[in-house]
Image (cartoon, rainbow, N blue to C red):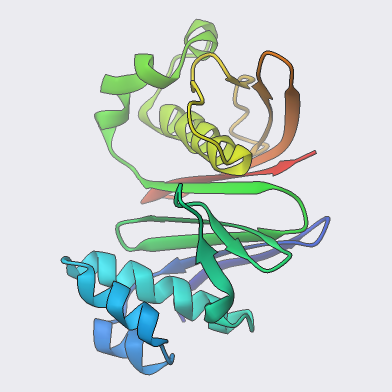
Amino acid sequence: MPIVEDLNLLIKTRVIIWEINESISELSSSIVLSKASLKILEQKKSDIHKKQFLAVRNILKYISIDQKKLNYDDFGNPSIGESKISITHSGFYVAIILSASDVGIDIEKINDKVLKIKSKFLETELNYPKKLTTVSALVYWNIKESIYKAIGKKGIDFKKNILVLPLDMKKNMVKSWYIDDDKIYSFDTRFKISKKYTLAFVIKN
């Protein structure tokens, strides 16, 4: 079973993480794709991108949602009927969050490249006393990327518009905010650390 996590949370929110260990044919055989989806699949050049695309549709089938309801706007933001949805993938991992509230989710394979670009998305967080590690930097990125998806608009400055309090690795929960000239939004923010990946998701309060 490729499902790593299936979490039912408060306010009608569900998070599913899928580890891809199937072939393209195996992923394809369990679902029926529309003509539009088949065309998109054919346009994807790499096998991993094809697998990620198919895994998303398999997750939708798993939670009994018609894949035809999944649409994307001009900015690439997904939508699915009246529910809010966010989708993420990295390597052989795919994750989805569904909720009645605005949500965002991000997953990243663990790699130390994030430390080389920390100054591009962190500002206040760099002043925290606890030393920044590869894992904590990735979690900060996960959270900020998730908030970016939840807000759903272009032009967000990760350093100026998104603030995350110091991480408590034991609780796997933290407070975070989106701050604009005339708006402040807070988020229920949770994260997960695995040996192979980090993940965070946010639910707008």
